[in-house]
Length: 85
Image (cartoon, rainbow, N blue to C red; front, side):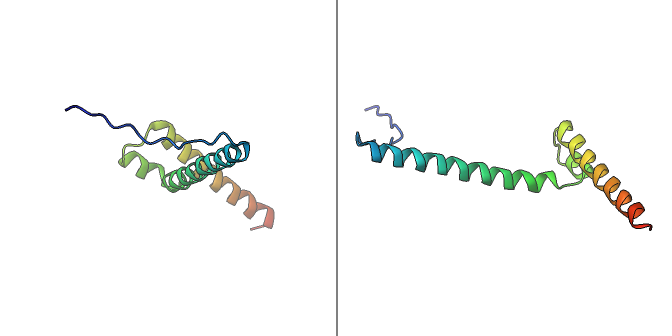
């Protein structure tokens, strides 16, 4: 006997308030998933360019990390010059 399983889809009520509630819940779940992915990516994005190369990150990500580090150093130099030090 060959049976296939299908993922359970939530049964939407024909009631407009229930439909609205399901839409809000789905958008909130999508928002939470996007926030989780952003947190995970920010951890990787804070790694140095050399570390990213070592783990085999795409060259675009390595270049972005190097640009971030260079701009951070330039801001620190500008701040020191502005303060007279």
